[in-house]
Image (tube, rainbow, N blue to C red; front, side, top):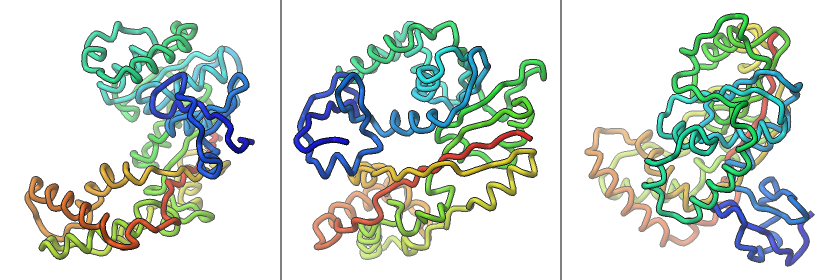
Length: 332
């Protein structure tokens, strides 16, 4: 448990050693899922590392097994899988060339010439160096594959003993994803995967009650857009997440998998990130008429600025999470 006035080393901004600042006690305990103890110090992880670490904590694997990391991104989950299971053989797959390039550099698979010339944040470079130090002993245990998971083909004799999918399976058609998993995994093996509140409506933490996309601030922005002539629907009409536990169990069962929900974590999302990155994308979903994209972007930014100054626009303390749910699906 974090104590009052304890020094928390913040690695959430890419600084591997942390700035050692003193965080407000209540603030830190709100973030407790991201705070871990390492070498006697409490460390505040980035949300990406925290989610990957929680996911992999549910993996049950044996030394020498072959595992698949689906949608590995920049290999955060790949390294976490190996740190917790150091004798695995891992194939990490992603269809985004830029992310996979970073992953290969972080695992000493390429020299990073193009990546390093574009990186101008010393904290990011420092983070990469720490990552490379941790990954160095696993270089020969990892192979990266550029391409779509759903187009990936292997011989049956090369099937995998297990898989993880960190925030990736929910971007696919679940029936097709489980069908492909049935081809790639051995009988009795499992995939440990997680999803977010745009895809899965958690019965305990329903998206409409907790998810940041339903934050009242979004409503203030839409009210301002209505004044500027942009016709939108109410933010609370955003589509209900398409899946719940029953639908996931039904879909996976039809493809030969038994699925259980094993954990749920409320991930506090930075409101500034929500405002700058997510609101423009969500507005596009709700615009009821064709609008020039550049014009829409300008009006969204103007509406955000006006909404921020409105009394009470930033007071929603309930809708501030992404609801991260973890599942284990086992091939029958």
